[in-house]
Amino acid sequence: MRITAEVDSFLTQITLLNEAQTLALGAALAARLTAGDCLALRGGLGAGKTTLARGLITALSGETDVPSPTYTLVQSYDTRKGELWHGDMYRLERPEDCVELGLEDAFLDAICLIEWPDKLGAFLPETAINLRIEFAGEGRVAQLEGAQHWIKDFSL
Ligand SMILES: Nc1ncnc2c1ncn2[C@@H]1O[C@H](COP(=O)(O)OP(=O)(O)OP(=O)(O)O)[C@@H](O)[C@H]1O
Ligand SMILES: [Mg+2]
Image 1 (cartoon, rainbow, N blue to C red):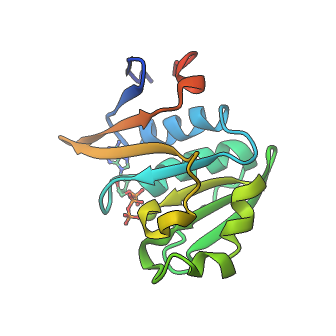
Image 2: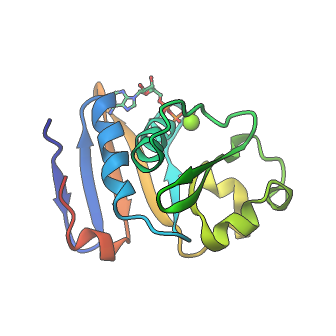
């Protein structure tokens, strides 16, 4: 499978022709994340945010059953890089509600993958790495923003 990535100094644009490529991008990103990193997964309903998270979580933990946390809002996993939290903030009513979910603490030292990150308001870490997925024909395009320390050696 071939995934093409166009890299400029700030933005990496990655063509994802099918679901398998979205999963593969998640697995590739898994190698770059370390404890305390937050990946903000942006894009509209059905863009592929959960799919990407699934590829990433499976690569780090071996877990193949990765449900969308649509109703639980958060789901945590033990991985070879420590704790990983997968959140879907779509149904979060108020930003401060993330505290009782445990997310504020998770941001300190867990890897966090957050769908609908804008719902967190000021609780979203400023250092979050933005990954946006957009519809493109039958497939998708992913834009990875501002992670220069990843982009330097980015290849899939
Ligand atoms: N690159 C791709 N090309 C085509 N279809 C894809 C691609 N990546 C994911 N999909 C498909 O898009 C659909 C929606 O994916 P997913 O549930 O991951 O979206 P989401 O962004 O998490 O949605 P929501 O906003 O509801 O949480 C799935 O059927 C998935 O197989
Ligand atoms: Mg989702």
